[in-house]
Image 1 (cartoon, rainbow, N blue to C red):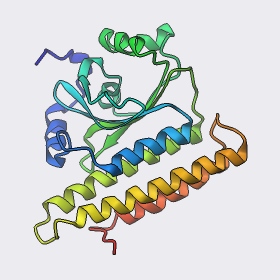
Image 2 (image 1 turned 135 degrees about the horizontal axis):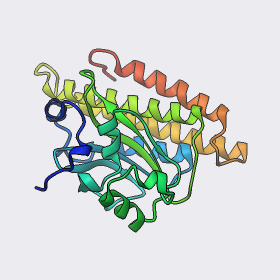
Image 3 (image 1 turned 180 degrees about the horizontal axis):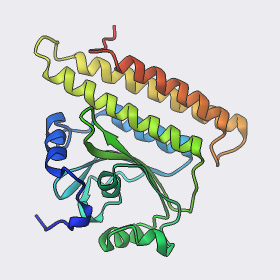
Image 4 (image 1 turned 135 degrees about the vertical axis):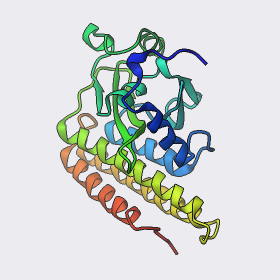
Length: 241
């Protein structure tokens, strides 16, 4: 364990860590629904990398990874995802080689980003029902990039869906009257729907003949479907036949 810089700690850090522990996802195995979520995020924005990050005491654990298969964890002071947890709002860095943006990072995070050749980062906080932020959903690129207001809105919707999935996961696994397979049924359904949505995204992009920025009409399709899935997960304990 190392001494974390005080400027990376958000207010009420102890409460935040209790919430992270409550949902019991930090050290859990990889689960397909989260893998499908980061894959979809990368395809929507035409970016090569996406991560679902959970920020622990001094380490960031990557619950799901797309484009960075070997990045399972990282020291908290080296991870850009720590910024969204500290600031409790979306972090958008359009060119990580530019001095104003590099200065937002710790020296360790700047060095890690430069070593990996990262130029773009956008991450939304994962805010649980008690309002504690336990991690981020982010998309990453090796070229400078900007996101429109509508694209940022879609990234936020993806983050909200990740939050809902984690809440439902916890409810399924701790409720003593549910059969053990209930979470698996929920996860399989959402993962399949995310795969179908990713297929639609790829098809619509081909039809539009445009990759960047993401066409507004495609974003509206994504928003509508993400809202539908979030509504299903908002049920106390969703069930699927």
